[in-house]
Amino acid sequence: MINEILIKTILAVLSAVLGGYLVFLIKLNHHKLCSLISFSAGALFGAAIFTFLPEAFDKLGVIELFISLVSGIGLFWFISHYIIHVCPACSASHFDEQTTKKFTEIVKLLFGVLAFHSFLDGVAVSTEGFHSHGGNSVIAAIITHKFPEGLALASLMLGAGYSKFRIMRDVILVESTTILGGLFGVVFLIDYVTPFWLGIIEAHIAGGFLFLAIHAIIGEVFKNHKLLVTLSFISGAILISLVGFLIH
Image (cartoon, rainbow, N blue to C red; front, top):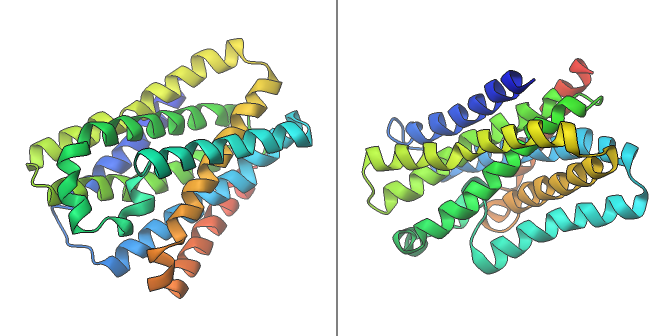
């Protein structure tokens, strides 16, 4: 199972790296970026609603499920509200020129937060082996989301004046914590975590996914391209739900 998780998390990292490299090949406008981000947000939303929450509900009571879900939402909200945007892909349209220039001053902090976010992505991938509700929809959602995440991170670094080599190196380093999260999950969750605590983890991750998904479609993105965002978001959610249904 370790080999399977390793392959899947590497694919997720490659998706982010490909998204980052795309910055040097084409110039995405705000319209296309909104569509891409919204689609990936819908994928995360679908994974949370159709995979993680049903699995967690099988293991937890309503109160435990609610508390775990809120804790996941609250953690990502706290980081994004008081520290820094936890996910560039979900907030790329909120970064103006001034914020991009300031990026050079907060790069280490941003990398730390993104590394944590990616680590949890890896943990999410590792838990899919426990899913009976179409677990492979999780990796499909994460791979979908990683692409615009790498693209957004590379775009911010490019705007801050970093070299191509530095940008690609740092995208790889940050996103590689996804692999560490996957290995951590498959080694420790299988042997040391009871179904109850696995349900806690699943609901917590679902909360984080829901926050990222909702954060991606509100504010400036939603105001500027309401129809585009809505259709892209729904398409991403439907795709992931279909993947889970077909696999199940």
